Length: 423
Image 1 (cartoon, helix red, strand yellow):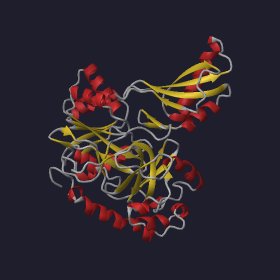
Image 2 (cartoon, rainbow, N blue to C red):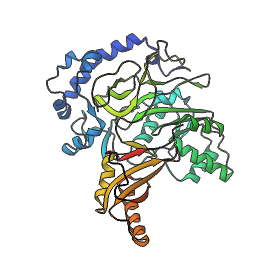
Image 3 (cartoon, rainbow, N blue to C red):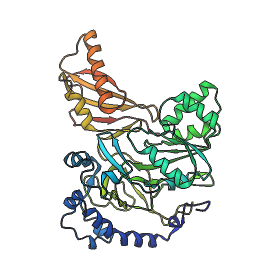
Image 4 (tube, rainbow, N blue to C red):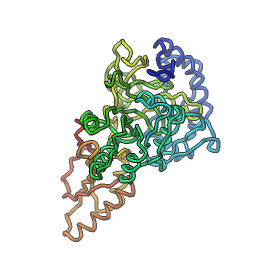
């Protein structure tokens, strides 16, 4: 590693990188076809012929939204994993539930690159505020830190006063976690009169990072604020870099993925620079993913020069919304099927729509429920409390309830409406 980039792979000539990726693509497809799940999806495909982007674009899309159904048929990974469960390091349970594997390789999630780009170095100390409970984000950070050679405070999420005290006492130089939780920590530190000025940088994930919040975090004592784009299925996909303290345009792609931007609802690549759905092919021996549609929207930056940081890989514009109604609230996915599940548990609900409002880091969920007749105040309180409990049980998130008369909600098929201010 040098001071600018993690390794020489990040500085390769783009044509060399493309040749290397295409040369390894047939072997990836063949390994995937050795699993029962991919053998069915890629039936009739000659792996030897999948050696170009044009050939890759002819293969079927497999959507993240499909995983729950696939896994229900063949537990735990839908027949898509090439490594047996007993040979893995961990098995995660993401909301849905969706099960995600972690192999035993060093930095299996490839998280050292975004961490290094954010300025994390050997000998440093970071406070890891991603959850260690069921989901993999905290372990992505652990793997990257181990590869770089820095120490980790395994703080997890919650317990804000303890978070502040740990920063004040141990003086970590880096926060890693969601942007909303860092804002909460800063506010709590101010209330406590605690000194958390040791934090020189923050690496964010699992939520969108609007520029207004980035500016607020900088103005409140964290000079460098980066975001990364990763998922529980894929690990690191892309990440921000900086030059002379200024964030560079776009997010640099990871070296072990092929990213396509396709027209939502199809596998057809869009024109260069157009917005579409992010589709990722992942070079991972344990869990090969071929044309995996994330449901996220983005676009490629297609200007000729490399990033000012010296990295030469392609760049995407970052997260630009969802291709479906699925959305993230406080770092957790909320699916339309969950809204339907909540409504079906309460027969008096005729129709329901989950409205997500507020601003990032202060978002709120309100389930608007149509009922045939609005009940009395006492009955309404009990009914509302029961639905609030179901929201928590199904989504693992807090939510409010608003009972409305039948016919109030638009007849447009929308189950999740995102009204947050991302400015």
